[in-house]
Image (cartoon, rainbow, N blue to C red):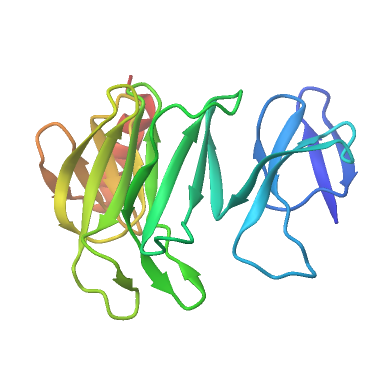
Length: 216
């Protein structure tokens, strides 16, 4: 596997071998990848920290997880228990891989051989993780119960239901955490403070996108 590393400061491109696709930055010199075993197909794989200067230098951080993401200096790991496979678990770690809060456990929806990961967003300023949560376990083929938009405050360790009876659609929030664009075309504006929802015209959508980008 060959990847390309772009160095914008030096206007250069380097080929990097033995690096998995779908990587995330860990720090300036390391990336995070899930290392899948081609001989043993599975929906789970270890989370590995890999050096960019020496790709053979690897460290396994977590042995078993479904998916992961990185928000600033927070690593989010998504997992499903063998014992309770009807729930999906969100774990949040700092850069030293110390768990910041107890795992968030919510009902999941199955899809063929794995599980749906609903859309989510992280608001760095407020340390809030937003995600859509089904009201009960089920299958994506038959589930019609709708989703709740839940805000988890990682500092206060509490959860608030922001909206009920939502659809699982992309969401993108302003840095101050007050406004979010929502929908497959980000065509709807939702106000997390007032609970208002507004379908935007194309002109309004462009204006609101500019406001969200510049919001503080």
